[in-house]
Amino acid sequence: MTNFKKYSVNLCFFLAVAFGIVAPITVTYAQNTQLKIAVVDTQKVLRASLAKKQIDQTVVGNRNQFQQEFREKEQSLLTANQALVRQKSILAPEVYAQKKADIDKQAAIIRSAAKARKDSINKYRNAGLKQIESQLGVIIEQIVKANGYDLIIVKQSLVYTLNSLDITDQVIQQLNATLPSISIQ
Image (cartoon, rainbow, N blue to C red; front, top):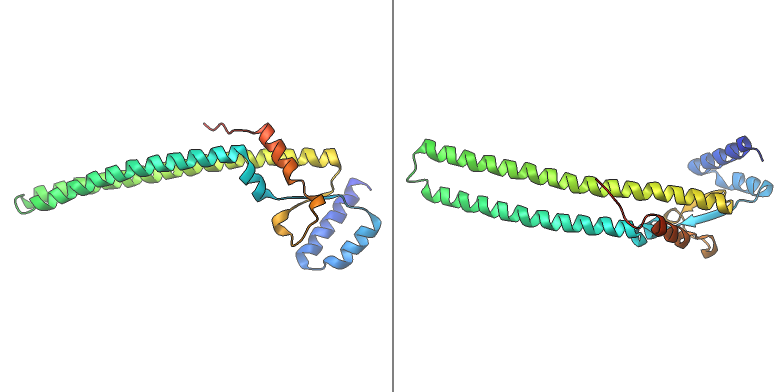
């Protein structure tokens, strides 16, 4: 079958699935051709990925460190604010207002730094996941070419599948062999 015909049939099948008219197209297609199908459990792949485990460890470690630092700064500001409240009666109103403004400014700086730190942690996580997804695409493409698969389906979108169609373990093995860790700048 030419690539154009194969593409046309695949497009028709996709459109049929999208519009709920699968049965007639599937039967006709199956009579003319034999599809070689495989299934991948992407959630299992991510759970078993060494690189994903590294990302999770790094994110949790950075988040815990960040939360500890933030708690210490927050406690310091709270202590300073309580001391200022105790001094309110002996301070001139403008001095009190200035000190209160300074504490509020410090709080805003800490909130801004906290947001930047959270954003940095999320950016690291997303960059790592992007690397994994990219490598996963390469691996699946290699498996498709090596085994002549016509269709790879994500297991989460299926109600039932035969275990013999599942290539998840093969994908995990190759992913961990080619991407055992992540390097993000």
